Length: 207
Length: 343
Ligand code: SF4
Ligand code: SF4
Image (cartoon, rainbow over all chains, first blue to last red; front, top):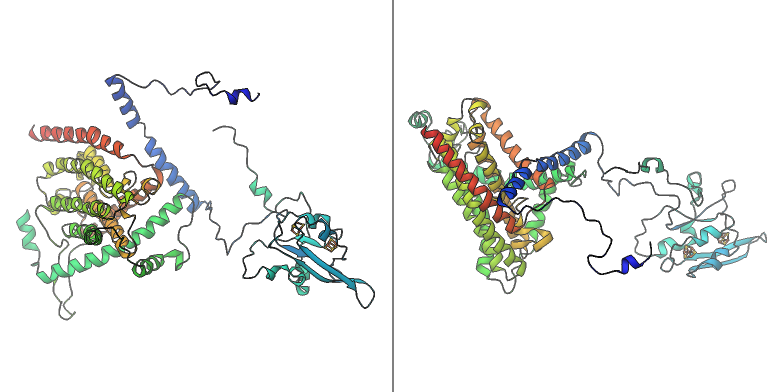
C-alpha cells in the first residue's frame, strides 16, 4: 500500500470501513425499545462482576500486581545497561583490566579517563580510571569492546546520590575483594532475563 | 404499638441524649475516616493493587498519618474569595451530615452501668432524637448539606469551583425529586415517617422486608442515594478529569477534610436508611445490631464497588436520567402502590 491513501484527505472517498452499529432509532417506539433493551441487558452487572473477579484473583489466587519496590525488586535483564562494574579474575583476585585503553578510545562521549604506568614488577597497572557519569550515555560500547570482559554493565540502576563521583572511581566499580565469590559473570549480548519464562504469554488471537 | 414501646423503655433524659450525641460524633467521624482507608483498600484490590501498606500493619495507621497531614496543613483562603462564605461552607457539609444522623438509629440502646460515677444508670437511646418524622428530617438535612458544595464553589473565585457549584445545582435539582418519590411508596405502606415504625413493620423475618413489596422503589432510592452522596457514577461535582476538583479546588487542610468527613457520613446515613427502610433494619431481636452492621456494610461496599466498576455520566445525562426516566417510574410506582392498597 502506497502513501497515496494516507494523503487523501477527501472525506468520503477514502477506503474506510464503518462498523455496523445498527440503525439509530427515530420513532418513539423504537427509542423506547432500545432503552428497555439496554436497561435489562445487565451490562452494568457484568462490569461489577469483572471488578469482583479481579479482587478475588488478587486476594486469593496470588495475582496481586504490586511490587513493594524498595523491599522487592523485579529481576532485570542481563542486557540492562546500568552503572559499570569492573570485574576481577576469579583465581588470583587481581583486577582484569589490562590497561589497553580500548574503552577510552571507543567511548563516544569521551567520558572515560584512564592512565597506566609500570609497577615494580615492570607490569602494566591502571593508575587512574574514572568514568564521568554526567556525560556517559550508557551506550555499552566500552563493555562491548573490552577484550578481557573487565568492564561490564552491572545491575546497579539505583544511582541516586549526592555526588556522582560516588560511582565513578575505579575502586567504586571494582568488585570488592571479599565479595569475589558473589561476582556475576556477564552473560553476554543476547542473554535473556532470568524470569523470561514467566514473561512468555500466548499471543492473544481472539478478543 | 407505639405506646407500649414507650412504656417498656426507661425515660430518655437530656444527659442520655447528650452522651448519645457525643458517641455518634466520635464513632461516625472515626468510621468516616476509616472509610477512606477501606475505600482505598477495596479500590486497590479491585485493580489488583495492595493499597496503603506502610504506615502500621497493612497500612491501618494511614488514617492517623492522613489526619496529621490534614490538621497541620496551612489553611489557605484565596485572595478574591468571599472569605466568610468560603470558610463556613465546609462546616455546613459536615454539620448537616451529623445533624441528619441525629434522627437515625445508630447502635442499640443501652443503660450505663450503676457503678460508673456521675453517669451511672443513665439510659442512652438508640436514636438521639426520635422524631416521628424521622425520614423527612434526615432527607431534608442531607439535601441542605448540598449547600456546602454550592456555596463553596461560588465563593472561591475559581472557574472550576463555579462549574462545580453549577453541577451541584444540577444534581440537586435532579435527584431530590426521585429520592422523595421513591421513598413515598414504602411510607404509604407503613403509614409512618418514623424509623422505629419501619423497623417494627418488618420484624417478621426476611419475608416481611419491604424490598420484596417495593423492589422498584428500592432501586430508585439506591440510585438517588448515589447521587445524594456524590458517588460515582454521579460524582460530577468534583470529577478530577473534567473540573480539577470542582467545588473543592481551592480548599486545603482541615476545611477540605470536612467535606470528606461529610461525604462519608452521608454515605453511612444513606446506607442506614436503605437498610432500615428496605432491608428490615435492626429487627432481628438480640442479633439486630449485628445484622444492621452487616447491611450497612454491604451498602457501603456497594458504593466502593460501583466506583471501581462504572464510568461516570455527564450532567445532562444525569438530568435526563432523573427527570425523564426515574421520576416517571417513581410516580407510576406510587400510583400502583396506592391502587393496590385501596383494592
Ligand atoms: S557506556 Fe558508552 S558513554 Fe558510557 S563510558 Fe561506556 S562507551 Fe562511554
Ligand atoms: S577495554 Fe577493558 S581491558 Fe582495556 S582498558 Fe578498558 S577496561 Fe581495561
